[in-house]
Amino acid sequence: MKLDILAFGAHPDDVELGCGGTIAKEIKNGKTVGIIDLTRGELGTRGTAATRKQEATNAAKILGVSVRENLGFADGFFINNKQHQLEIIKMIRKYQPEIVLCNAIDDRHIDHGKGSKLVSDACFLSGLIKIETEVEGKLQKQWRPKQVYHYIQWKNIEPDFVVDISGYIDTKMESVLAYSTQFFDAKSKEPETPISSKNFTDSVDYRARDLGRLIGVKHAEGYTTERYAAVSSLFDLK
Image 1 (cartoon, rainbow, N blue to C red):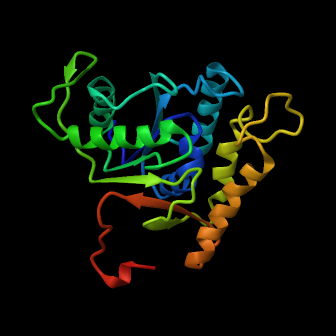
Image 2 (tube, rainbow, N blue to C red):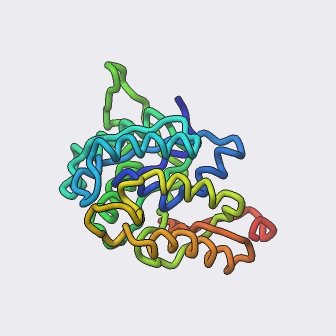
């Protein structure tokens, strides 16, 4: 299955928090999108790997993505090496996305920056013909995405560009709150974490509103890019 966009997250819920609105909008516009989670989030203070799996399935249905896979890397301990790169290369060649979205280049959680660099490196290596990979006994063809963009997470990194997600914030928030073990629940008896507060949940919305304010729309999501963002005409800029 060829996808237009393949979004990677170090943990289930990273994609929803970082680019859920963009994904919902692109799917509504007819694009095909998939999600690859690197880990099961098994080290998370709240919930379990099993609950996160079910929550990720529910969130994927809310967003309407075509496919969601989990690579089962070790939460907190995966590294950017050949073994992990090859597993991601297999996913890139399997789905042949034009665009890859991945974790923030620098963030509070160590897996986010690691995951960002790991996916970015794999995107480049996936285009090399002399790197051979197989899936289900079939040799894969090389494939390099046209663009790699990094969504913004905990830290308020200055975006290189923003995407207008007006009209899609409700879908984004619904997909985020599908992770009921992770985020604010006044009745929960689980330990508190930096992302379980009401302030954090509210911040997902008010960050989108603030980025939207800066470009004159209701809501937006920000991204950084590894190379210059190009347009064919000044009139393509809004």
